[in-house]
Amino acid sequence: MKNDFVSKVFQWLCIGLLITFGGGYALSLNEELAYNIANAYLFIVLAELVCGFGLSLFIRKMSNTVAKIFYVLYAALTGVTFMAVFLVYELQSIMLVFLATAVIFGVCGLIGKKLKINLSSFGMFLVIALIGIIVLSIINIFVGSEPLDLTISLVSVVIFSGYIIYDINRIMRIGEIQVEEKYAVFGAFQLYLDIINIILDLLRIFGKERD
Image (cartoon, rainbow, N blue to C red; front, side):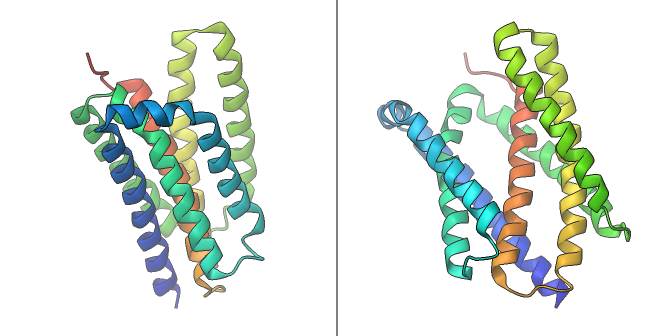
């Protein structure tokens, strides 16, 4: 039963990533459409936040179908905002970052799977660290320090790598007690967020911008 649950988590993770990156790349090929979307950027981000918080806060009350809709919609909206990544960075650079992220995910995922201890207490440490990074990022908007921006991105990669370990470990334990597909969708959503954030951080560090 656990293996079937974990398999569904990774299936939905792949679906979400394909929607985001496929949609973002396709949109970036049409400059006029990209310009029109940019005018509605704030609305798109707000809709994305509604879907994300809705899925996180109300997953227990959602049906399997509603959870899937929220997840797919979130991935699609993220794809729209991710269009900017394909417009700013060279495709080769993006692919290398994807590969690096896949390696990080594989290593951290294996650690999370093999650890037999409950990492619940580790989650609080990650939350505190993430809040700290968010606060520093807001401060740096006004300061505009490149060294601080680099440091924030490096630490963020470490934090979200820790989240992968934590989330995989949690998914393995949930698979032993939950069978509803909505929880597999939610598990995929959590890993999806980890991967997206690592990709964005690595692009800030190593990404080569278009001329």
